[in-house]
Structure formats: structure tokens, C-alpha cells
Image 1 (cartoon, helix red, strand yellow):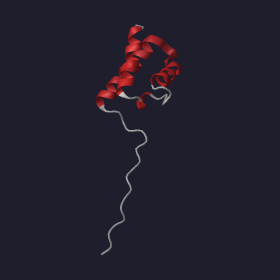
Image 2 (spheres, one colour):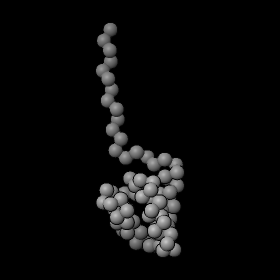
Image 3 (tube, helix red, strand yellow):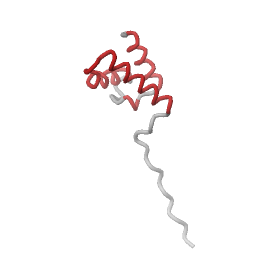
Image 4 (tube, one colour):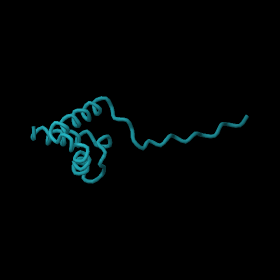
Amino acid sequence: MPLPAPSSPEPVSNPEPSPPEEASLQHLHTLGRAVHGAKWPQIGPQLVHTYTNGRTNTSSQMEPSEIADLINALQQKT
């Protein structure tokens, strides 16, 4: 009896954030809106780009330490 062909693993391009990261992302965006108001959708990706050293402009791709650093910076402005 022939063996089934091995299946290739699904590529993971954007893993879903873990629950603690999701809470941090929600906090990040809440603070961002509080500090920057209606301009947050334009300013947020620029700040993410800065705090990830140009690696991404998408907050869901940030490392936990990068999220924490950006949250701390936003808190100082409130």
C-alpha cells in the first residue's frame, strides 16, 4: 500500500497575537487615539515604523518590547 504524500506545513505570514499581546495592542491604540485623536490612523503606522526600526508599520507585527516602548512614550504625552 503506498504511503500518502507528506503534507507541507502551512506558511505563517502573520501569526495572530497572543491574548496578552492583543490586550497591549488595544491599549496602544486607545492611547494613540487619546493622544493624537483623528490623526492616529496616519500617525500610528509612522510611530510603529520608528519603534520597530523600520521593520514594519503594522502594529500586529510588533514585538512585545516594541509595543511596551511605544505605550510608554504615548503615556508620557498624556
